[in-house]
Image (cartoon, rainbow over all chains, first blue to last red; front, side, top):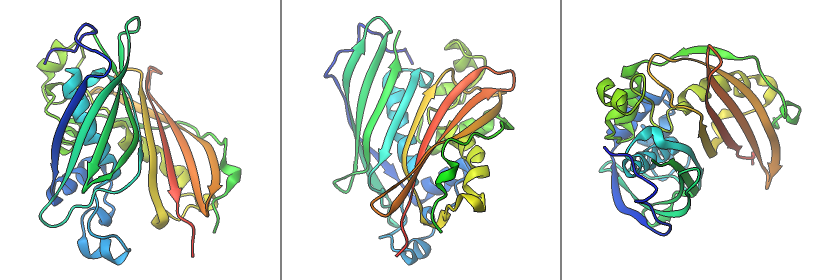
Length: 140
Length: 148
C-alpha cells in the first residue's frame, strides 16, 4: 500500500460509506485476540439475562474495525498516530450476524506537520455506536 | 459500595514486561478485519520502515487493560466490574508497538467522578519499552452504572 500524501488529501473529502459485517465468530476471534472474554460478547442467553437485547460486540472491536478502515485510507497502519472515541451504543450481533456502516470525513489538514484529522461515523441498525470518533493520520 | 475517590491521582509502579510477538499481532489484526500487511508480513513491515510487524492502532488496549487490573481489581477501589461499561478510549502513539518489543506500562488514575448516579473513572497507561522508549499513551474512561 502507498502511504497517503498531503497533496492527495483535502479537507471535506470523504471515506466510505463502508459496510462491515460482524458475526458471532468475529467476536469469539476478538475475545481470543484481546483477552476480553466477557460472556455478553459471546453467549446469547447470558447477554439476555443481564438485560441486553442480544449478544453485543466489544466496544473495542468496533473501534478496532473502524481503525482498520482508517489504516486502509492512510496506506499504512503505523500512520494512525492518534485515535479516540466515545462508545455511545452497543453493536447488537444476532445469530445471523450484524453490520456496522462506517463513513469518514477529513476535518483538517496540517500541511506543516503533515497530519490529517479524520472524523469517523459508525452506525448499526440506524443508531450511532461511536461518538466523537477522531483519528489523526501522519501523511507523507 | 461506591467507587473510592481517594484513588484519583494515584500512580502505580510500572507493570510488565509484556512480550509482544508476531502471532499475537496477526491474530488481533485479523479479528478487527485489518488487511494491512504491516501487521502480518515482516517483509512488508520492513519495506514500510519498521523493524518487524507492527500492532494495529487499538492493540495497545490489550496491554493497558492488564496494567489496569491492579487498580480495577483492588477491593479498596470499590469498582463492581459487573456494572462496568467502556465509556471512552483514546490512544496517542509515539511509535508503533512492534513484534519483539518488551513493554512496560505505568498506570495513573487520572480522575474519579460521579455523574447522574454513575461513577466515571479515567485511567491513563503510559506504555514504553523496557529501555524507556515511549510507545503509546492509552487513556480509558469506564462508567460504573449506579445501583438500584
